[in-house]
Each structure stands twice: as C-alpha cells, then as structure tokens.
Image (cartoon, rainbow, N blue to C red):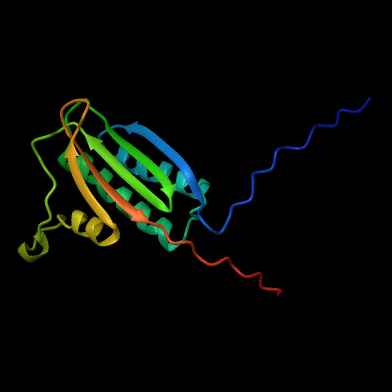
Length: 164
C-alpha cells in the first residue's frame, strides 16, 4: 500500500493579450488609509488574474487610477463608521473602475492646486490623464457619490522567447 498524494492542480497559464468576455469584482473597504492600500493590492491581484500582468503599462495605469480614487474616497468622502466600495468591471478591452463613498457634499472637481504650492490636490488630474473617460454621479442606493473611470486596454504583443 502506498501513500502517494495526487498532484496539486496547476494554475492555468496567463495569456499575453487581455481577452475579456466579462469580469466583475466588487468589495467594500474601511474608509481608512489601510483600506485604500488593501483595495489597491486586491485590485492588482484581480487584474493579474484577468490577464493584465504586473509590471505592464496597462496594469500600472489601472492601479494608479484605483489608488487615486480610493485615496480620494478616504480623504474626501469619509464618513465615520462607513466604508467605501470598489467595483471593477472588464468588458471587451475596457476596464471600468468605480469607487463609491457615502459623502455627497464634497464633489470631485479638477483644480490646479500645484500653482498654489499646496501638497496634494492633483489626483483627479492624474486620473483624467490616464483614463479614456471619467466622471461621477450621485450614489443610487444611499447618500454619497460614485467616481468612475474607464481605461481602454490595447492588446500588447506576445513576448518572444529568448531562444528563438
């Protein structure tokens, strides 16, 4: 009698081209800097799983956008005891990022705070530069707002094997 263990399942190989039929990820996070960091980390894992690998320009742009919107939800949309929600949706080659907070009185606006010598205030300028389109709307299921951004992800060429 042998105690041979069955082999562990292998992770499916990742493709070099994002081919989304439809993917969706939604999670609530504490409205704290730690919650914003966790949102960014989990989103990075999800994007990698969807075929947008770590270190690619697309992955970096998406994560930077997610980080800025999550940070803004914590800094400007915080209501004590209430979380913010991150939603990612991939369809075709577009990724839609939505961050919903519970504070409706502080609305997003593009401003050039750099000219006033203040730290911060450039997050939405960065989002506007990275995203193909962005905006906001009042939260449908309670007080607050949803800030969203859509990034179109172009397929990138397959990486060549170094021995060929």
